[in-house]
Every structure is written in structure tokens, then in C-alpha cells.
Length: 500
Image (cartoon, rainbow, N blue to C red):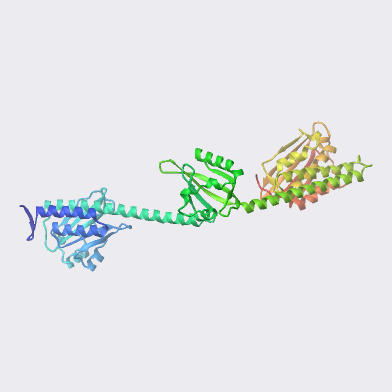
């Protein structure tokens, strides 16, 4: 049997092979990186015939640090940590064997520390992962060594196996960390879903509900382990069932989001109005898995909304009746003088208020599109149709602004029909609006092609309403410029409404 020997210690080839086999088996079955280090130090000290050895790896800052060792003092490890001939990521460097540290050109302090430890010869063997240096293992000898080819080859073999094992351990650690984080994330998600203050559910691809959170289970009185026999569709009100199931069936068949409302019986048998919003969910391979959705009980909100609608309808009815009564009183009061200009003007203003009220009623007194309001008010005079050019971006007026602007446009149109551009053939009016800095809206009424304009000798009600009333109602300003070629009215208002 052949043997390898050096400095009076010999290890047979068969023992070396057996040691390598045991090392490979040990690191394969190792349950931690510490077990890998222990097995590696065992095979290094046995086959490379050294009593002292160490394993060092680059840390996150790129510094070589001791991770495992045999026979080294704390002082040595502290002072020689970080000393390495390689940088992180160097590709496939050869090992370095030093027969006598005193014969090298290392710094004197390094030689002193190594000699102080009783070391004469050293072996630097790089550990690589995918061809790049991640660390090294070291062998230390108290006497000078020759490092024959067989020892060098054996050191490289051990280093390759050790580097691979460290890489595998790191990958396993990373996988375990990722799985742990995933489990924690799943636990947080389950807790969030379970404790959410709304009903959350998931269905399979056939539409059967197979998961309900706590609020949903409490609503229907379903036990956590009773979902297999739970039929959600059976709880839908008979009058709503066909529409709800048809819409949900369509969403499942086409894999599309859905929002639907319907009445459902809760565990006490009470009918509650639920708004359902659901989205499709898919597997990693793109296959449709079912739907995930949220149910919100809107019974009270819907009741409040219905009450509000009833109150608003009653208010609108009463206001319209009031305007009708005022018109009737005016007609009766001014019966003999109905043809007078002042009476006609008054009745015209009432009609504008009624039309503005109808528009506001149609939008539930929330906001009014400026363009719609302008067209409705200006359409009341047949002579002006086609001669008033209206242009401006979409803009919403508050109810107070809408009434003020409606009356202002009526006054401007009436004046144009009597004295201005619309009183003669060929005259035109341009009505434009636009947002201006500091959150304000500018409305510009400009007449052209009418009779020469002269400033009025006195201020009538219409003029005062434009110049003074709009200031209060619009929190802005209104200026009338009686230019010879036509009246120009510039209105500025604080934007209580918004761009639509």
C-alpha cells in the first residue's frame, strides 16, 4: 500500500480517499454551516497533516474574517483578520504555499505575528463559488514544508468541495429565509383579511365560495369548517337573485372585475343590502383560479340616500310651486300693464330662475356644468340663436354660482337684444370662459357688429345686479366696459366649483 509522508507523519492513499469520501458525505448531510466547517477542518488536518487550520470568508464589507479554526489564539485571529492575497470576486486564483514565512516579502509585523504563533509554513487555498473567490482555508505548520504536488492537488480538491458546500448552504439559508418571510407575509395577510371590518371572500373557478373572513362568517352564521356546504346564492333575495347571479356568472366566465348590489339574508333572516366588488385571481401559470371580493353592507347608507332624495324632491316641488305662485301673482298684479317693459323684464327673470332651478334639480343641487347652464339660459331668446358663440372648458359651478351666472347671462342677453349687438342684423356675441391664476374663473361676454355703444346715463337694476350682486354671490368682480364697437362684460369668480 502506498503512503504519503512528511515530517515523520504518514497517511495512506486509501485513508486519504476514505477521508475525502467521509467529508463529501458529511457536508452533503450537514444540517448547518457549522457542521460543514467542522467536517472541513477534520479532513484538512487529517489529509494535509497539519494540527492547525482555519476557514475564512469575505463579509458584507469585503473583509476576510475567520469563521472556523483549530489551534489558533485569539490574538492571532484578531490581528490577522482581513489579511488576504485576494479580493472578493477574483476569478479562479491558484493556491499559495509558503514553505517559510521569514523568506517572504510580507510586512515585518505580519511575519512577527505569525512567528509569535509558532508558525513557519502556511498554505493559502482559495474557496470559490461559480469561479469567484468567496474566502479561503489555511493550513499552518510549525516546521518548514515542501508542499509536494500531491498535497497541492489534495488541497484544491478539498477547497472545491468546501466552496460548493458553502454555496449550497447559503442558497438553502436564503431559501429558508425567503420561505420564512413568505410564511410571515402570509400570516400577516391572513390576519389582515380575517380581522378586516368588511366581508372578504374567495371563490373557486366554478363560483363556489370556499373562503370567508370572520366578518363574512358572522354575517351568514357559517362555521369556519362549514364552507363546503355553504351556498351563498341561496341567501340572495328572490327579486335580486337572477340579476346578481347573471352578473357574477358573466364576470367569472370572462374573467373580469364586477360590481353589483343585492339584498342578502343574514344569519338572523334580515335582509341587508350588500355592495359586492370582485376581481379575478390567477395562478402562476396564468390559469383562472376564481374571484376575490369584498362585500360592504350599505343598507343604512342607502336608506339615508333615499330619505335625502325624498327631501330633495319635496324641496324642488315646493320651490317650483313657489315660483309658479310668484309668476301667477305677478301676472294678476300687472294684468293691465302686462305689455310694459318693466313687467316683461320681471317675468323674464322669473323664467330664468325657473330654468336654472330645473338644471340644479337635475344634478341634485350639487354642481352644474357651466356650458349646459349657458346654453339653456341663452336658448330662451329665438333671435339670439346662432349668433351667440359659446366656448370654454368643462367647468362645474356651485348652486349659488349657477343661479348668479344664470341671472347675469339673462341680463346681458336681454340688453343685447334691446340695445346691443343682437338688436340689429349681423351683430354677434362671444361668450368664453377660462380658469385664471389664483384659483379663479374668468367669464367674458363680448358684443360685436351692433349699434355704436354709449355709456348709459343712469344705472338700471340689471346693471347694478351685474356690477354689485355678482360681487357678493361669486366672491369676485364684474366690470362693464361700454366700448364703441360693443359692450364687454368681464366676470371673475372664486372657483367654488371644479374643472369637470
